[in-house]
Amino acid sequence: MASIVNFDLLPGYYRPQNLTDLRVTWNDESDKYEVAFYVNNLFDNRYIATPTDINEITAPSLDTPYVRPNEPRFLGAELTYRF
Image 1: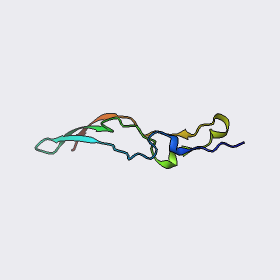
Image 2: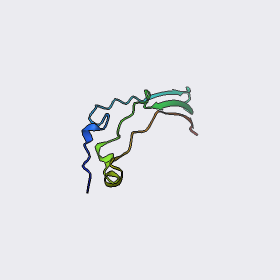
Image 3: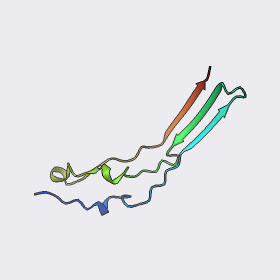
Image 4: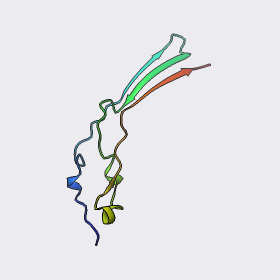
């Protein structure tokens, strides 16, 4: 007996996705050096990444869909030297 998954019950499935990224970059006067700091998903909002990231592979055995959430907050830095 196959289960039918009601995707309306998944929290946030039909919610708009508000993701904010931030990047700050500094270059020296000669443009040889560059330093950048960035944050992806600044406010750490969690969503199901896209509707295609929902899979019913586990629905018959576990009675639940498999979903892939979006990436959590990610911090990074970049150093660049041009020669």
